[in-house]
Length: 255
Ligand SMILES: [Zn+2]
Image 1 (cartoon, helix red, strand yellow):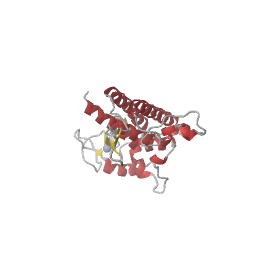
Image 2 (tube, protein in one colour):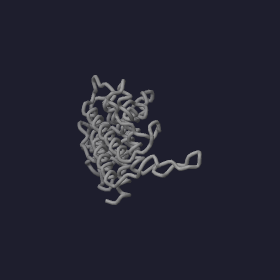
Image 3 (cartoon, helix red, strand yellow):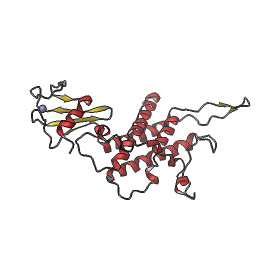
Image 4 (cartoon, rainbow, N blue to C red):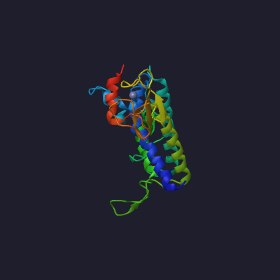
């Protein structure tokens, strides 16, 4: 694999993790989701006055207590993903970090002897979103040029460029973490029969199609004879695309 492709794939995986992290935090606090309605519709169905989840401000899972998570599988996945990305940041920092203490760009390791849990966590205390952004900066070789100072001199670069073997380590780790996150949320590539809810227009079996980079769709197995008020897909099935799904959700009921 060439270097540019590896960079692109690593950055894409890190961004998916950041974008879907809020959904995972919500999943931990809700009982395991049924197949229906699709999880990606949940934000349109949550009441508007629900607590808005600001991922950047949430403490990392490793620093929180979890007295009674409603979805243990989601919590386990979240803790594993945090550990993988935090450990990756440690590894990259050890190899390329030149920036001095006190610089906000510095990744701080854990300090087990620190007086409280938050300072013992080092940069982990800033959470997974921050760690993903920091790793992305190293993958993109940001801040690897000498920096002009006020007195006209040049200071040494804060970071060295990432060597290829660490880029590949970053890519591997990010993609493993991304895959686990998407599987946990049911957003990996899959087709799932919708249980107990036949097509309201023809009684045929409905199938939910999801994938990491596509909005969910639902198809009816009957074919063009189905009277569903939606277009046909290339295989001649009625298909409810993203824009029509909320109608189907309404007709089928959420119960
Ligand atoms: Zn139908």
